Each structure stands twice: as structure tokens, then as C-alpha cells.
Image (cartoon, rainbow, N blue to C red; front, side):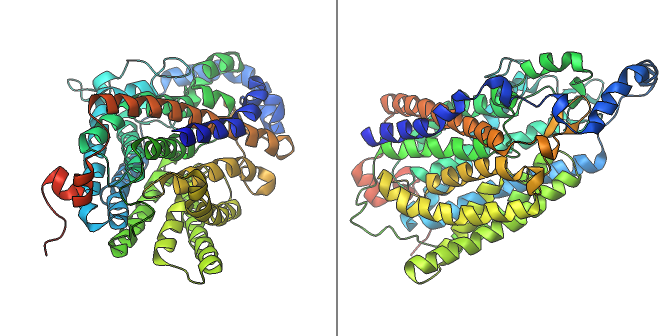
Length: 507
């Protein structure tokens, strides 16, 4: 427990001082004066054209979702499900001992199902409706309002383009898969010794009090169509989540998914304790073949995870797609090089782990950096996460069974910070929108890498502390109500038999 508290204190000490020293207004979306000159020209022309535009908009029918965009988002949703069941389940399952194979598959499949149900009941509403800067409201409880069954009409929501809506039901389904896989990532940290019921209760509590607020703080905003004039900008910004207001960039979940889950996993590794025999017995993965299959499915499914986060079948989806492709390949090579230098040999487990490390690191950056920046992020992440599962793991001293923090925590932090670097147009990045009224980007000479990296660090720091505190409380509640850990006898026999009454393999 002392090591846990020391780790959280260290994380807070690294990120919090720099984060909170920055003035909040300075890190908010940049004012129109900082964007390209074309934005000023567009703003100056707007008043003269406003009356005809209003008349035209009154007569024009409301825009409807594009069928191609809808098809792409439905496919992306399916790809994220593929990432989780079977992708993540097989990746984790192959890494544990054979006597615990089914327990990991069960934890992933049932946890994913649990979170999807909770998402439909209340999760979507609290994450993606207007409330305050920390949590949403109750407008979409039980998914009410997503469609009118009598009229046969469907509610629409915003994308990142003005006048380009999407079916809100599709967005809700897409985001449900994000919530589900995030909870499942945590399973790897306490694999092989937690009670099945305890894992589910913890994930329900953590989802409610950590995932939903972080998702709201990072991703909720009014949408581009709400920014109709300079007069409403401050009002619209004030409705957004706190971290979005700061201007932090997280394309597909570096903070919301990976760092959030990694901290919860690390806390669990400390509070549940080490596996029986840890450090004395060999805990050899029972099937690297299945781990390879799982890693491959993760890579394929991740294209929906990252490229789908563009919310449209457009150029930024293509940018996120190729970055997911290239950064992952770079991370595989980096991890193999690092292993060869350290041990004299590159391993299959290392290659699979490198792929996941690259996927994690490129997640916040996917549509926010150029192709060169994506390659650098992947390459750096390969080396950084290799250190995370070797040097850092020994330094911390926790039995993080399947290296959730070493890969998702370290990779997520590396990716989030480097997003602030390589988003810069001077380094081949697309920059960020500086004015949502005109959708003008921040000009190259106005982009500050230092300021953006500091904003990214603020988001990381808040995520670490928030998830850490919620996790400590949630694990403690579960321990008091159910007990966290199976008995030593059950652990030695294996959770497949003792928790589920079946085995993965019949001899």
C-alpha cells in the first residue's frame, strides 16, 4: 500500500505542478487573432452575408446523415467489438497459465457485456449530454430520445464538420464499445487471483465514477454547429468538459481509455497483492500462439477504434488509418531492436507487445499528427513500453500480471505528450482548430509546442489522480462487500475450475 501511495504521489508530483501553473485561459482554444489570415477575412465578411444566409437556411431542409459515413461508423463499431471479443480476450488469455485461460476469457466477455448494459442505462447520458464540466446530465437515460418509434425518425448529433450530422444512435453504439474495452483492459492487471464477482463489481463502480467523468471532461462539447458567431463562443466553451475547455488533444482515447485503465489496473495490482509464488515460480504464458492471434485482431480492430473516431469517412479518418498502420509497425520494430540489444534475441511475445504499445501510443495522436510524427511516436513507444514492462515494473514492485500499466500507461502517456509536439504544423501536423466559428486552424507561427505539451500534461495529471483515487475507494468497497481475492487453495488449483467449473483444455 505504501508503494501504491508513493506511486500516485510521484505521478501527481510530475504532472500536477506544471499543469496547474498554466493559466486556464491560456490553454483554452486559441482566439481568432491567432489563426490564419483567411479566418479574419471570413469573420469580417460574415455580418454582411448573415441576412441572406439566414433566409436561405430557413428555406433549406435540415441536413441528413451521409449513408457512407453511417456505414463507416457501423463498421468501426464492429471493429472495436472485434478488438475486445475475441482480440483482447485471446491476447490476455494466451499470456496466463492454462489453468486460468477461461477465467480471463470470461472476465473480458462478461465485463464487456456488463459495461454495454450500464452504458445503455445511464452511461451514455452522463458521458455525452450537457451537465457541468465534470459530468453530463440525465437527458439520455435509458437512451431516451434517440428515436421516435411512432414517427420513425432518428435523432442526429454533431460530427467535427459543420452541417454534417450523424445518427446519434450510431455514435452511442460506437462509444459503448470504447467504454467496454477500457474496462476490460484493467482485467489484465489482476489476472489469476481476483474473484469473478469482485472484478465485475469493481468495474461497475470504476466505470461509473472514473470512466464517465473522464470521458465527459475530455470529449464532451457542443459541436461545431453551435458556434454560430463570436458572440456565443464563450457560452459554448463553458458547456464543454473541463479538459476539452483546456484544449487538450485526445483523438481516440489516450487519456480516457489507456491511462485511465492503466492507473486502475496498477492500483488493483497493489491492493489485491501478488500472485501466490510470484518471484519464486515461473509464470510462463501458456500459448503465445493465441497471444499472437489476439494481438493481430487488436491491430485490425484498432483501425475502427482510431479511424472511426473521425466520425466521418473523410481525410482525417484516412490520416488516422495510416498512422495506426505505420506507428504500430514502427513500435514492433523498436521493441524487437530493444529486446535484441538487451537479451540477444527478439521474441514473439515482444513483437506482439510492441504492436499493442504502438497502437496505444498512436491512439491520442491518430488524426492529430502527420505520418512522420506517427512513425516517431510508434518508434519511441516501442522502446518506452519495453522499459515499462522491465525496468519500471521492477522499480514499482507491483504484480501487474499482464503489464497493463507498462504498456497502456506508459504508451498512453508517451502518445499524449508527443501529440502536443507533432500536432504542430511545423512538424507536419494538421494543427488544431483555433476558431470553431470559421473552423480556421491555428497558424504555424502561432502554434506553441510548449504550451500544447503543457496542456497535454494537465490532462494526463488529472486522469492519473482521478482514476487513482476512484480506484482506491472502489477496490476498498469491493473488498469490504465481497472480498477481492480467491483463497490460496483456489488460486493454486486455477480459476477455471474453482470459479467457473470448467477447463480450457481436456487432457
